[in-house]
Each structure stands twice: as structure tokens, then as C-alpha cells.
Image 1 (tube, rainbow over the protein chains, first blue to last red):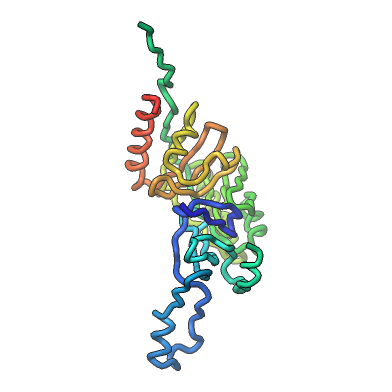
Image 2 (image 1 turned 135 degrees about the horizontal axis):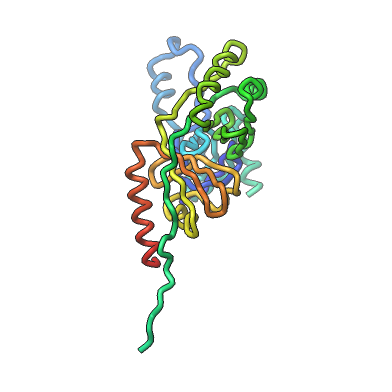
Length: 99
Length: 178
């Protein structure tokens, strides 16, 4: 079982308390009606499908209920870090150097 | 031939259903927490899992802007009135959920063992006098730790038969020394 650090509870807790919520840092377009069909399709469906560090959202649904962001290595399943929703995307190189 | 003696606990833990109390779910933005706490006459702790109590009213912090409040039946209307009076100045959500949950009390020598058999979270890491919203098998419960082997668990009514069935099974296992 994965152990995930919830940045709101400030505790490392079992994966079963959490729910995965897709890729992080996808901004909704400011003016959706100005988008072409292809751009709208990309916004809705096209994801990075990263091999390696992946920015993703999680929700501590059976706990504090908050959404937060995490960087997880999709190869090793290791969580590089978790941070609160709304915070800037961390720089990957610095994270990997710290490992 | 030697006589085998088993020292198994006849009653590994005591399971009680506590009488109904007033329950509320409170949401308010962190900036207005102190003002609302003063208006309701309650202390609203800021750390998740922290508890406070005033008289018979107990408060548990569930999230950065969410609290669970348990009150005596008699004090329920007073809390609703205090919330309504403060609503215009301090926008918040105070929802009565008394009918949603039933409180089970687990106490006795193996209460902690029984919970660790079902909850994925490290229950022993919850300090005495704190609480948590966590997972009990597939049901979300509010767990209040009152003593090293003394817990209260607020379970949603629809999950109660499931939760009790699991606890009954654990009782049988603990009695047989598994």
C-alpha cells in the first residue's frame, strides 16, 4: 500500500483514505467559446501520460476531504512530494536532486 | 497428560450504542473562524484532529475549514439560534446532521486491537484526547479517542449493520485467541 503525506493533515496516511483525481495543473480556458474543436478536445481528453515524475491531484476523501497536488514517479510509484492545491508547480530538477 | 490452560479474554472489548445527541457540521472560512467561535461560544481548534469542549458540547476539527460539533439534545436549539443570529455578519454553514450518525463506544482491554484489525490508519498514532475522520473497512467514520483503550465512533446509520457485523466477527476472533 502507498503511504501518502496529506499537506493539510500534515500526516503520512495509507492510500485507502485517498482518491486519485487525475492530472494536476490543467487550467480551464478563460474563454471556452473562442476555442477550436481541436483545442477543446485537447483540454478535455489529452493528458501527458508521463513516464517518470507526474503531477497529479489527489483527494483525502476519507479524512480532511481536501484536494491537493502530488508529484509521483509513475515508474517506481514513489511520491516525490505533495503540496496544497493552488500552490505553484514545483521545479522538477530541484526535487530530483534532493532525492 | 498436561492440562492445557487458555487465558483468552472472555470479553475482549465492550461495544455500546450511545444515546442520540445533537450533531452539526460546521463550515466557515479560516479568516472568520475566530469571529464565529466567539458568536457560538465555542472554541474552534485549527489543527486537524484537535478537539475542544465546553460543557457538554464537543468540537472536532475535520479539515482546514470544517468542524464536527456534538451537543446535548437540550442545547441544540440554542446553537442553531446562535448560528442564525451571526449569519448576516459571518457567512457560514451550520447544518444539523443529528439523524445521520449513531455513536458506538468501544472500550476494554482489546478495543485498540479490534480497531487496528479494520482501519488502515495507524490508530495507535492518534493521541488520547484527539480524533480523526478515517476509514473503517469501507465506511467513513469519526473516531474520537478518549483513553488508551477507549474510543467513540460516529458511524453513518446506513453503514451501522455492516460495521457491527465486522465488530461481531472480530469479537469472535479475539475470543478464540486468533
